[in-house]
Length: 390
Image (cartoon, rainbow, N blue to C red; front, side, top):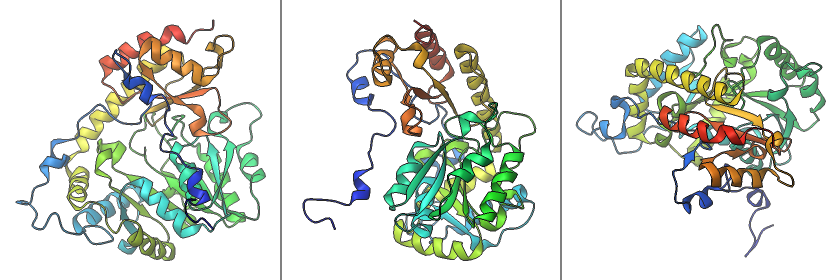
């Protein structure tokens, strides 16, 4: 029972600096900085979806409250997109526009979790999801997973099964994965669907990078699988596909009864996503297809450039690499000291792997789309000599 001057124990486990504690240090350096720690883009969005393109002359009362579910213009565009992807129409009542996927996932947690409930969190994971679960009083159960796929002797299904307890409520999946860039193979998806059905688990599918896949013939989105549909709640965002992370627009859909509850919770969380940027998001789905194709091709080239420079396999999707830098530590160095040395000598900022899971104290996450290609090439030229064993 927190009383002055204390605060809730769930808040005490959270931090506003999950990506890097080195950013303040970078601001003090008198040299070019390469912010490869943040998952963003160097590309300006399509002209039709920029903030300045949304005008009251084109839509009256543009700056008033939007309907809680979302503007009719955006909902119609999303429903058409989901029908194309899923091969069947979605009940309009089963869709909820959110103020970005972060809010969407937070609302899902608020709806489904009681304090002490557990969520299976295959690691490494998107750094914010652990705190989103914990802020509800839930328990994120971390399972080394994405970086182990394909390793001899690793049984993905057994790893998930071993983590289930009587308090387990849900399984969080993010494919393409942030930070490994991996896609969930179809046989493993089928196995996890069986596990979820046997243990009455919800599946949370985070589709943030659904449009940023660089391999031929990828598996279909998880939420479209027949063995996922009845228990899968899916979060999407316009941030990654269309380069409008600052717009804060996303959407969630899932089974009918849970979506009624989610809409109720969302009303008290953020009420509605920004109305002008809902218009921009709708225009993205109708007008920015060519821009998205160009962005995907440019990101794929940037990913290949990084892979070649660092000696890593090219990413299957997303905008990240995740790799172990322990072989490049000097004697007595830990990850923080190594990242400090990288910053001082190159100006490159990287995310500590521990932000994506406790089992990754010597890993780093690197975004390959946060700076223009010429700057990325500069950064890689500076970084590569430090990524050699001493």
